[in-house]
Image 1: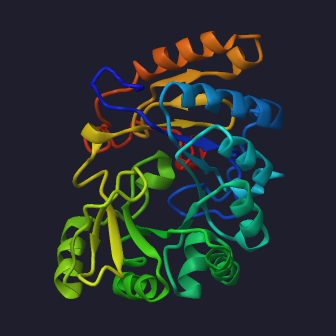
Image 2: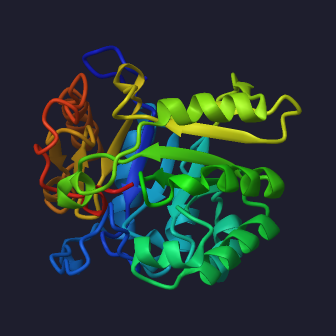
Image 3: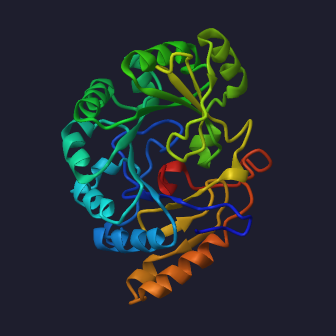
Length: 323
């Protein structure tokens, strides 16, 4: 088992395969940003597979492919197929779904079992305002394709923003219930200027209202190893998860680290603790040396983030770190 110095088991690795995206969500990627990582610095599929294999040997059992928008990385199902052969318990994908209709079957065939789809609104105008693109139809087509090929569960990630989409929360819940999706509501985090400029909404009162309205009860079944706390309808058909890094942080049970497209491992979204693996991968490091480096890196994982105490601390924004 891979453990940090606070005795937390680290069994979840999020792997960003690109920092680029075809959307410009207001809380994530600045509209005019052009400082993307150079392609020659991207880890190759061979390098990613080798490094994930080292993590797997040390106890990581869950891997999520993220971005940016991961489906912009050419031949992503090929990488998924390689990773699924490493003996992982779970291989998932986070996506904005604009490209998902084209790739859903290939991803399923490659071993991806489930997807999280970013969807902050069901109103076309609101989606365009948040994402900077008229992407609604493509996202809906992607959701349909994912369900058709049997990717399950499908989770909808909704960043709740005061005065932007908070009036749609009940509509989103009912849409998810009707289609068998799991709605996950997320508090905005102050990552970079994009995150700090987002209209933060405390999900505590929202959760209490939804629990009362839909007679929800706590969900005790583990649904993916992430930070969400789930509630379900009494018939078990509907589920809503709440991710509350600001109002009720979950640092004591954090089980994940994030690998960026250039091979930098970040131990925490809210801290700068990191370790660069690309020099080792391209410098002839042995498997034993990679594993030793992973053990060293995990020791750098901080006890908790400081989003509340130091909201201006982080310069990097979400798409640079990976979802």
